[in-house]
Length: 260
Image (cartoon, rainbow, N blue to C red; front, side):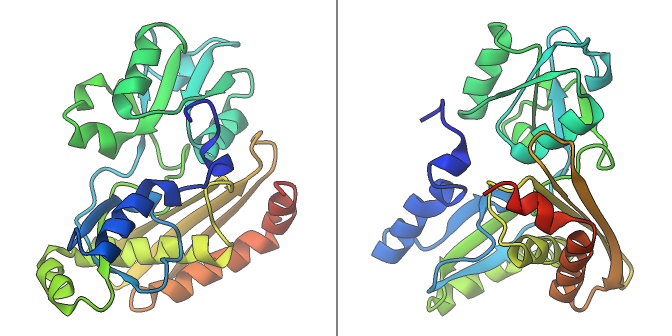
């Protein structure tokens, strides 16, 4: 279903449903996901056993003819599967044409190589894990393209009742990544987050403090609500909920109501 937007065919849950079925059937003990693809609320009976050390969370710019997004001329085409990326690119570069880009990484690269797009934007972490970091022409600054909640981190999921699996995965957990991703996912959860919402959330840990930046945007990038909060790292969910409230104060509800 590569010609249909993901949010129109079941959302991010499509990426993990088959693996959760394998867990439920006893065919797998653990499932590994990209945390940005894990819905904000897990189905009953499932648990996140660990969130691993985070890879680069930024978005990456790929193009055969241009070195940076800023070099693209008016009317140039940019491919992305993410409403979040599309909205932020449109907000900063309204003269560009943004098109839907679905499929696995190899499929997306093939579309770029045959000239379907002048450039594409993908998650840097996925390219790095596939040994394709050399294809990246530039990294988009967090200030320019706020990542998705959990972007760059891997999560291990198991049945909540499987104490053995929980214990097995525990040593793989990264404390810093876990705190940051918990805060980011709390924003998503507080806003009823799914892939139909252009929402970014990115937390950084400094000592015992967390800084959390979040964004909600209209798909065309014309309306944006931003939040920038700091709080005690001991309660990342509370910080995420506070960021969601700040987004609402800056117009997030109006943006979200326009998506329905």
